[in-house]
Amino acid sequence: MTLKLHFAPNSRASRISWLLEELELPYKLNAMAFHPKDLKSEDHRNRHPLGRIPVLEDGDVTIYESGAIVDYILERHKNGGLKPAVEAEEYPYYLQWFHYCEGMVMPPVNTIVVHTLLLPPDRQDETVREQAKRLLTKAWGPVNEALEGKDYLIGDFSGADIMLGHAAFMSNRLGCVSDDMPHLKAYVQRVAQRPAFDKAINMS
Image (cartoon, rainbow, N blue to C red; front, side):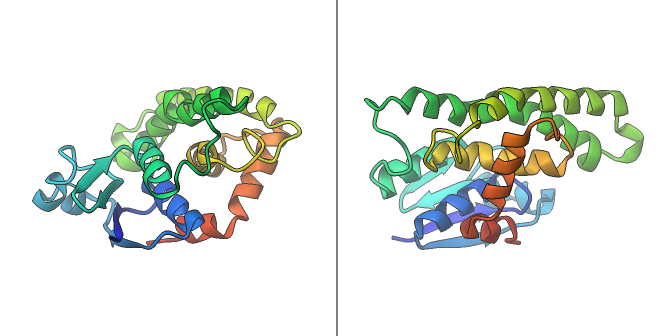
């Protein structure tokens, strides 16, 4: 049965389309506008009670939260591929970087987006936005160090890169990947040059 991804551009849903493209899995795309008329519609609230994306449908399964969807796809449709075995030396670090994305990186990204794009200009707070940018830049420091001598977070490309690679690309667009982080800068370039990523990030 074909997977169905409910998607809006410039969102976490791009992580899922990227993964699906990397794995060459067949899927249908329900492309929506990043706007309440689509996301808060009755149809979409039946998929996600808060009207968020991404949402993945797989037969009788409907699942949301991008990290959960990545794990679900890798276990159900790739037999655990793109992630190390539990016994592997890299496994703890795979888990660490997989969850570092939403724990440390995305909260300040969310604040920046709210105070740059989502709020009307008279409600945007420059102080809050600049503080979030500083926090985001600081959060990338350990990732830059971890990437020294490696192409990807645990060596080989993995699900952790689907999570953090997309976030690094978006953070770089926001000007929050410092030139003082050469390993991270090079990583962003490697991610951007992957054909599956390029296709996913340019979907609309």
